[in-house]
Length: 205
Image: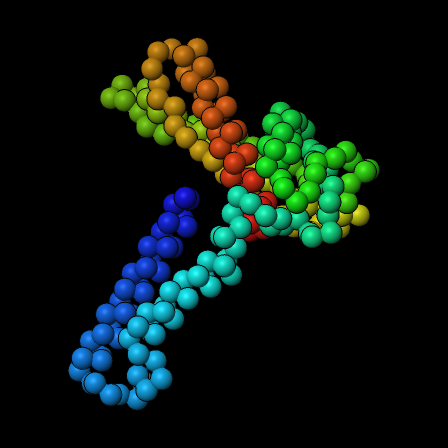
């Protein structure tokens, strides 16, 4: 579960708990107040639970990782292309992932599809973020970002916005060792990016 979603769930749970406690205290102090004329404490708890379900449903989190999400219901074949040169390296792996996980549509070729999913806007930064006593960098931060857009007949239907993943490389050894660690981290972040991009696409957010 993503940290942002987990944090939101925790906040909502705290609000539910506080609301339920208030209802219990209010009923003890006022056995027959007007507020409880049609909804008792258990009913209030039920409403809070229903609110939690509606909150998650309306935000689309019940679709994360599955379902059509951003892909319209009338799309049965989706082509996947690179919108610029920055996406070509990741394109084959992304195609395989979507082909293996999509259940309501298939991945086809351009010109023979109902809609086109474009991959692009990729950037990578690799910068030192902490230094040792001698001033030599001991930690580097790698940030990898890109985005998706869904098109039909040159009309953009949806855009994911930037999808960003990041991690650290600890400087152990010389430049060649650092570069090897960077390459390993890049591969890990590529896999992570593909997973995050799929969650975006399949939820529509």
